[in-house]
Length: 146
Image (cartoon, rainbow, N blue to C red; front, side, top):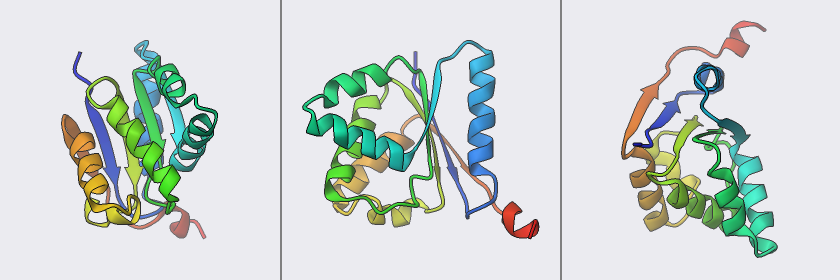
């Protein structure tokens, strides 16, 4: 089984999270196990697991989900600890489980997520291999409803 990723890019409010949820819903209807998390929640859970010397157990437990949706990876500037565990998680999932990632930042700005340039390149390399990249353009739906 090949583990393809889906990467959804675009400005805030254009529907990236909505599309990710719709993809997840369709996968669930086909019997695929899916879990949705914000990037901040995931990083915090990974950090707690690492602090408790339980990081590998946590990551292995997440393997029961064939697809993980990581929402809003670009919104939060993570601490070095959060960045490290998030990278470890991406490396752990590489070619073994699919990720659907939403981001308001293009790859050229991911150095703001992963402050170490080698880690940024390695993370991007892993998520784009076997990836479908969708760029959503337009005005914010929230802005249009004000």
